[in-house]
Each structure stands twice: as structure tokens, then as C-alpha cells.
Amino acid sequence: MKNDQNSENFEELVNTIQLTPKNLIKLFNVNGYEILNSLSSSPKTVKELSKEMRLSEQAVYYHIKKLLNLEIITYQEEIEKLPSTTVKIHRYSLVSDKIIIDMFPGSNSSNSYFHKAVSGINTRIPKFLRFIAPKKSIIEGFLVVGSAIIHGKYNATAQDGHYVGYIGFLLGQLGLQYRKNFSFVKLDTEINRENLQNTNMIVIGGPKVNVITSELQDNDFLPITFEISKINTITNKKVKKSITDPLIGVIQLIANPWSHSKKKKILLLCGPSRIGTQIAVYAITHFSDKIDEKLTKNKEFVLLQGILDNKEDIIDISFSKYP
Image 1 (tube, rainbow, N blue to C red):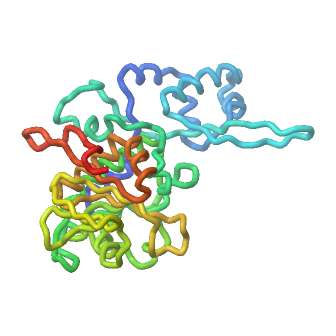
Image 2 (cartoon, rainbow, N blue to C red):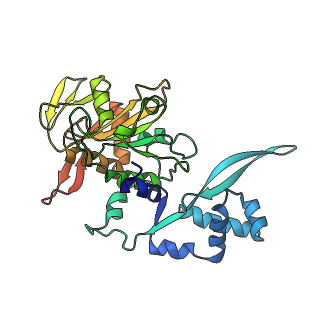
């Protein structure tokens, strides 16, 4: 997806944090900015910042505390060994070097893409997403979307590329980042056997439009399958029950069946229809706690129903219709 606009914009999205104008005012003082500028080059302790800025450690810590409250910086705890004892120290680093301003927090403007994408996001990393960044908030895996060119055994074209923005912004809000010069977003047609065997994946789209989903279903790896010959129908293999509903979103979290490591996982976001896939994506950006709760109960999947307004825009999610 090297030439795709969604791929080009992803780095900007995933490494961006959101501030209100009120919080922006708190950010811009000389010492606070100098701390951020210093941390942009490398993580540092309060002692190192104090020496570099020629400020007392107490003054540096005062500004550090404000930046932590704004969730602009984070820290890693380290153990320092001294001759007679050991002490814990905090090494601070930037959550992101990019900021967007939500000028009207809480606005219901239908044109506010970013507000729609991030409203309701909890900055605690949900359990179901922790597999994608198992170490120090660095993403290890791929976000896989179906190609917009005719492909696969169903000769289909996917229209899911714009969901890259929503998921990318979600991961960025959670403080997750990926390695430089690493292409996190891939088309389903770009995934090779090595990728399948050695990585985590977030996969968007059903078996008709995403060949990774198709392979998972063809090899009987999915607890919830999609009926190709029946419109808007899914089957729960465990209870051998079929459901027909175009407004079902399906979230499945399974071990990567091609990997030799049991820790590698695949998060599949889709539905029996295009709107079903949109509902699944909407759900993970708005109801992460509820999804964690459901996955704790069902282990591998969550079924949910989208509630639409008269303009066919998603306004809510129901978790009660399909237990």
C-alpha cells in the first residue's frame, strides 16, 4: 500500500495526540517546551533534565507532573544499583511529537472526522489490543485491509481503506507507536507466507474482500464464519446457529494459526455486509471496555448490532441482542 493515501497518512495519525485549547495553554510555557524539546531527542530522567536545563530537580519535576497529567509524556521505570542499595528511577519520553487541537470538545458536528474517530476512547490499552504492542508500546504486526483492485477467488474489490484512519488514530491515542521505516499498513495481497507465520495482525473485512479472512475461513480457523451463498448471514460454529442480519458487527480475536508462537494473534474486524465491518470498527473505537468484557466471557469473539439513524449513520451499539 505504499502509494495509497491512507498508508501515507498513517504515520501522522498513529503518532498524534489530541489536546483541547485549554490544555494547549497549559503546555506552552518556556520550561515545559524545553523539556519536550529535550525529550524529542532521547528519553531522560529528571536528574538529566535538571543538569541540561540548569533548573532545580524540584522545578523540573513540577513541569514533568503537568506534562504527565496532559498525557503528552510517559515514562519507563528502571532500577539503578548503588553501592549499598537499589533505587527506582523514571526515564521520561514523548508519547508523540504531533498534536491536533480539538477546538470544540464535545461537538456533535457531523463533519468532525477526528471527533467521531476518537470520542469515547479510553487511554488505557484494552486487553484485546495489547497483543499488537507487547513491548514498550511498540507495534509489532500489521494492519491488513483488502485491496481496492479486483482480487481473490471472489474477484471482489474492498472499500475498507478509510478505516485505517480510525484504527490508526485509536492506536495513536493509546500511545502506541511503530518502528521507523516500518510499513504497518499492508494490503491483503501484500501479505506473504513469512508475514503470516511471524507476526500479529489486525485484519479488516470479510472473506469476499480480504484474502486473509478468506484463508482463515477456508481452513476452519474462525469460530464465526460468513455464509458466502447467503446474504448478510453468519454462523456460530460452536452452537451451530446461523444469524441473518446486515447490521451485525463481528470481532474475533484468535491465535495466529500459521505462527509457531502461541503469543501471535489475529484481531478480525468485519461483518456479513460492508456496514457490518463499519460497525465492528466503530465498536472498538468507542466501546473498548465492553469488548474486553465480552471477550472475557466468549473468549474468541464478540457479536454486536449497530443502531443507525435515519441517515444510516451509526449512533450506538447494542451488545445485548447477540450474547
